[in-house]
Length: 284
Image (cartoon, rainbow, N blue to C red):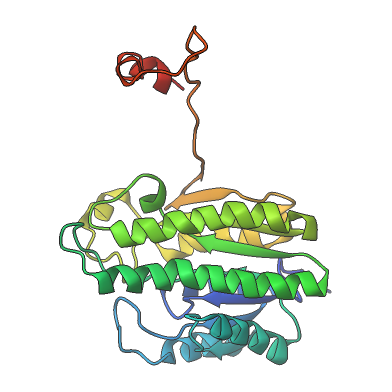
């Protein structure tokens, strides 16, 4: 009797931040669905800023012990050369590339008035800069292969709704949302879909957020299936979408434009008129 087909049989996936939490859960699920996984994690997590990438080796070992195919990669994606090297390593070791999942979660929460430049740069670079460089490097490989592909980014509610003490993270992940939308438009003609997930989950990086305790089970394993759907043929031609996951609740997020209000006269609005008609202007 033939074994059941996995959703990602014969696919090669790079998953960043895969040494722990959501990245790890995603890597394990992808491998269980037949993917050959590049477990990317170069250390520097919220829980262990000085780690040397051992977590990537451990997760790759878990996958191989379960009968899957995985390779650990600890090359930093902080430069174009680094991102290109990660993609090249995937191709050299596993023969090709089909999927990229950007799943890094690095935080340094500080108030806007107290945030240091170093905290700003570290978080923006870890999220937005790395996502751009890896998306660019992966897209070049996928276009060259000529067989389409899937890119799944990770953003958060901080990007769209705001969250106190997260100016660096909110800015970085808002940028990732913008990157997702632009890349989706540009890569659609190459049959490459680009989507994003916005998870709410209990991880090492969010352990201090007591407000999550009232929301029930918010495990990384709740989030991984959303990434799997967007990285598999189940996604179809959907692209530029943002999927929110909060425990057992899954929902679509989108920017909404109000109906607005047209001025009767063909003339610019005055500031006073905008204030006076504010409710009508904002009505959805």
